[in-house]
Image (cartoon, rainbow, N blue to C red; front, side, top):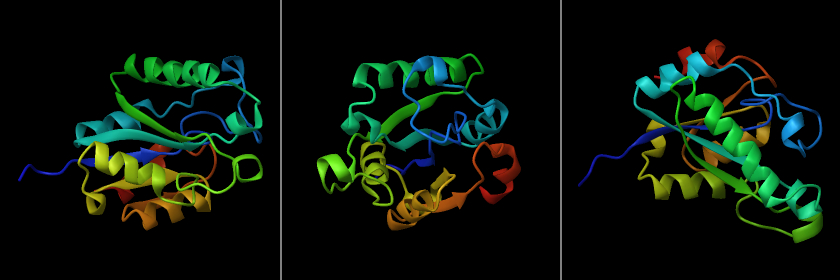
Length: 163
């Protein structure tokens, strides 16, 4: 049986890009945080880097899938310039006030379960770094260790929590 992979899931807003207090709706408002060295360290330890983010602004019609794709491409390209590969993005396009209940909106574990299945991950060797309690709950529900940070806190400050 092939060996399972390990990953660090990352929330987006407040972890990879600056927390704006509201939805980031346009590429111009998307300010990437400098976590390049910290994520390179994790990558060098064999972790896949996966993004898991709620994007309820899509359901609200505040931005389009196309604009979201531009933001994610910008994130991917900027990290690649620092030799860091963000392997994949998982996002929930729903919002309970507009689309009802779903299985993928954090604190539910759906986004992480998609990543676990797609990349043959061992949840017990994987982590989820987020700046909200819902991120930790989603991680723990998927069998992944959730790590709570403050919004815009450097990931380098919590590297010692990851084996």
